[in-house]
Amino acid sequence: MLWSITFANPEFLWLAPLPVALALWWARRRRPAIRFSDVTRFAGRAGPRAVLAARGGAVLRGLACLALVLACAGPRRPDERTRLPADGIAIMMAIDISGSMDTPDVAWAVGGPPVARLEAARRAFKLFVGGGEAPDGSAFQPRPGDAIGLVAFAAVPQTQCPLTLNHSVLFKVVDALQARGGADAGTNIGDALAEGVERLDAVRVRKTKVLILLSDGEHNVVKEDAPDAKRPGIDRTMKPREAAQLAANLGVRVYTIDTGGDPPVGAAPDAVQQRLEGREVLKRVAEMTGGRSFAATSGAELLAAYREIGALEKIVTPAPIYRRYFEYYAWCAGAALVLVLTAHALDRTLWRVVT
Image 1 (spheres, one colour):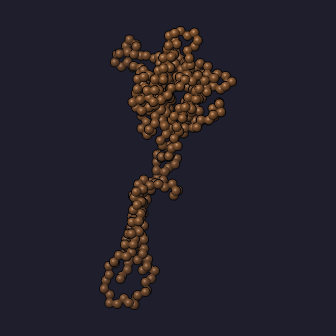
Image 2: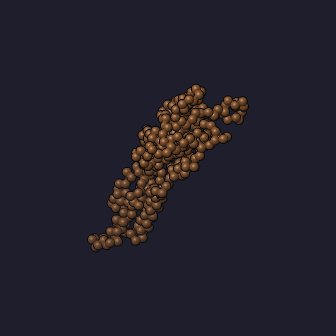
Image 3: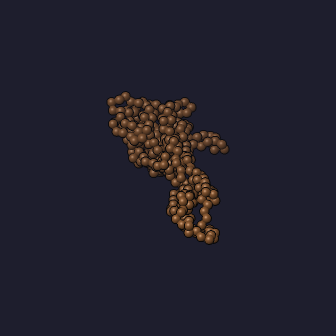
């Protein structure tokens, strides 16, 4: 379609008047002549072929020059089936799936039955990404231009879904999340942050990179305390503040959402102190990277946190870019060659004149 044609080098279009100048010059040039005794009898007897010979060469050469100008400008048409949104945000979501996330103590809607923390996190995340109406009647706008991925973590973080624009696939992965226990019991916030930051750092086409971490516990996986932790080849767990410093150095903003709530009444002093320190660590992680920290123990508070994050990381209305273009410069160059050869051949055959 003509209206979808663009130019890779539009500055060459400034040469568009050149074909007109060339055609005028060719039409008015002095032609080679031979001496003849008297040509007065032929005055006014120029036929159609003579007129065509006088103007046709100029027109063909002007069109050839115009085709060359267009070839240099690089006409092309985008393949709209391969379009991608530009300038969206890269968001990595890190969700805690430790055993405590199965605790059914989150009031998702007023008057409704409580749901598990993981289920509430799942619903809120899908509204944040895909948009839709929240239980309180408010609406979330979808984020189709943002590349979004998912890291799930307990004692060991795993990338469940790399950054993608195919959010329907992401939702299927989110729906399949299950809380873990047993050998994978624990909450490894430091390594989860590092995993998400590493995935974001690999993206080069998006300027804004954001990591959202949701957890109901404290970082409690400390491999470096093991007797053989200092032996070569033994993994060392990254602490949350170390991972936050890494994120800050790489320009990744981190938002944290604490869903653990306040310490239960009658809890041991050590447990109370651990809970408060865990919440403070999440707050410091967000502050170190230029993000914000939220506490959410209900569906309304969880949605309010995502709504605030969405306001801070506004949806970009992107201009489309494309993976592939259909290029037409070769056709223009070929047309120019055909026009020049045609004019040259006609000047020596049908349009040959004697003056």
